[in-house]
Image 1 (tube, one colour):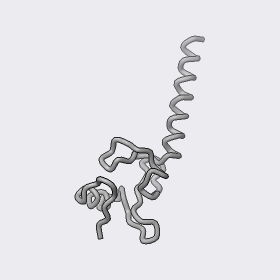
Image 2 (tube, one colour):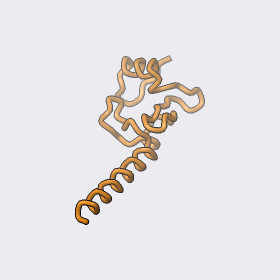
Image 3 (tube, helix red, strand yellow):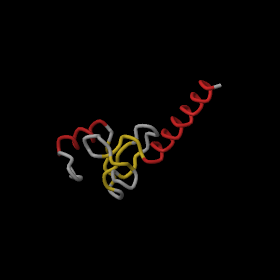
Image 4 (spheres, rainbow, N blue to C red):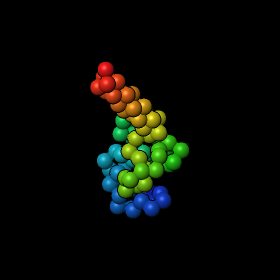
Length: 85
């Protein structure tokens, strides 16, 4: 059974289900795997930011995306401090 979400084509949905990027849970519905933590979360904007991916959702969940952004900002600050010291 293929479920359509937003503007995702049936072909893309079938491909992502076959590769494991998506899975269907009878209780939760369609889930997407976060590329960072590898956990499956509901494929919606509550758990994923809007993104440039073909399904319209970012590849990382919101928690992992925030951690990644904070880590990158911290590294940039450290590099700027060491460059000016």
